[in-house]
Length: 187
Length: 104
Image 1 (tube, chains in turn orange, red):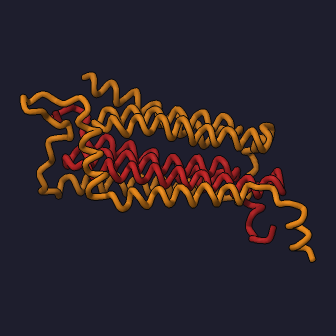
Image 2 (image 1 turned 90 degrees about the vertical axis):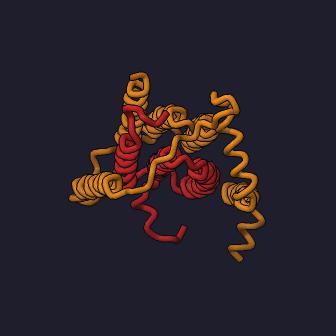
Image 3 (image 1 turned 135 degrees about the vertical axis):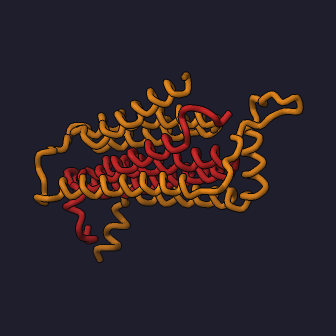
């Protein structure tokens, strides 16, 4: 019963935040709604035995990424709210609604068809048990670390290269060009 | 442990709803920053399905994939926001409709 309650509350947070992101006029409000969604997803991660990922979700997404969004909004000026009444193409919104409902129906159909057709036995969950049969409290982190640093160690190292490239690229992109460079281009 | 009321399908349907909402946002909104937030919504929906399947199949590999998705999403947001800052610094009121050409 507790699990159902947690799921319903977290799902309400996720969906409410998501609706808030797409209907709010102001980018700041959209970013704050995004935080709500991300926290809801973190709660669902905990409910599904992904404790480490829930912590990473809160720190990286709700902490770093949303703060980055807010930082850029503040940097570019906070008062340019979008007028949602302007609709550049007449049928854009009905078409978007139809397409997304169709995708939703397709995915849900696939989920239930696959569940009925599946013959694979479901696993027993991820909660790693100790020698005496009781769950280890940090079993999730240990299992994740073992998988990450044995099977996926090359991919793990490559992500560090990716992050360095992203940082260097962003610094180059966001830097204001010096006057000497501009003259060089102009001449 | 797994014999609970809330089965994997509930999480998958919730993730499908979250993905659809994000897709509506990407198709309807015109502010590039809000577009990025909607892409984050879609990435989170996919992460949710990965975690749900990892639990159902008892395989930690799904959670490892979510970890990598988060890293790539962080890098993507950093580069994307750099591009948006570079564009909007030159044209402060630009929407995505104004950015139809590559010329600065």
